[in-house]
Length: 366
Image (cartoon, one colour):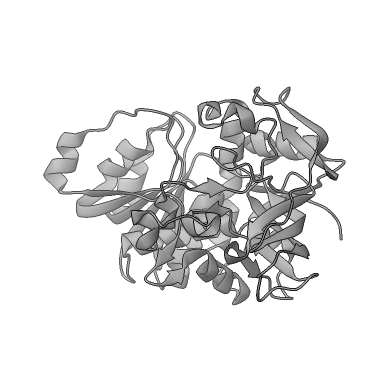
C-alpha cells in the first residue's frame, strides 16, 4: 500500500502528540473520490481534540489519526460509478458522511434530510467513527455526494473555510431572523464572523458584536457589525450591551468553552427572544432558568449543518462565497506551508490572542 506524508495525532495532548510521519493513502472505492489536499483550515474542534478535551470520542483503533476536516484540493482519482467529476477538478469537501455515503439503510435523521444528526455519522478528518484521513495529510477520500466544485475565482484557501460558513448558514436558518430585528453575536472569531455575514446578506442591519479581544474589533466592523462591544476577559459585558441595545430580539452564542456567555445572553434578551447556541461548551454551565421562564425565551442548539428544505446548506455557503455575499479573505489571518511550517500554524491557532489570529490555514503551494 502506498503511503503519504501526514501530520499524525497519537491521542496524546498537543504538542507532543502531533508529529510529521507517514500514513497509508486511502484506496478509492466505487462512488468515492481521492483528492490531493491543497488548503486545510485549523478548526476550533481540531484544537479541542489535540488538547485532549475530546479524546474520549476517538476510538483507539483509529489512532494515530490524520486530522483536518476543512479541506479543499484537486481530484486525483475517481472511483467506479462517480459522475460529474474529472481528474484535475478543483473541489471542496463537506466532511460529513452519513448513511447514504456509507451505503447503509437511512436512519430516521437521514430520511428527513437532517443527516448531521445521523446515527452513524462520520467525518473526514475526525476519527470518532470512520477512519477517513483528513487534510493534515496529502490525500483524503470523499464520497462523490460530499464534493463541490470550486469556481475559478475562488481560491483553495477561501474554499477551505466553507465548513465554518455552513455552520453560520444553519444557525441563521434555525433562528428565522428577519430584517428589522436587533441581534447580538457573542464571539467575533471565525464562527461569529460567519454568522454576522449571513445576517448581513439577509438584510439584517442592527448587529451587535461582542468580544473580549481588541484585535477583532476592526474586522468585525469591516464584515458588517454595526456596533462592537469589547470588554476585558473576566468582565461581565452585560451592562455595556444593555446600555447600547436596551434588549435584543436574538442572540447568537459563538464562544462556548467555559465562558459565562449563555447567562449573559439570557440577561440581555428582551421578552420572547431567541438564543441560538453555536459554541461548544465543555460540560455543565450554570444558567438562571427562572429568568428564562419569566422572559419566555427560546434556546436553540445549532450543531453543524445539513439541508434546509431540500437544499444543502454547505452548497448555499459556497454560493454565497462565489457571489461575494461573504468574504473569507478577511477572516484568514495566517497561512502556513503544511510541510515546513505546520508547527507555526498550530501555535498561531492555539495562541490566538498572542498571534491575533482568527482563521489559520495550512496549505500546499500548487
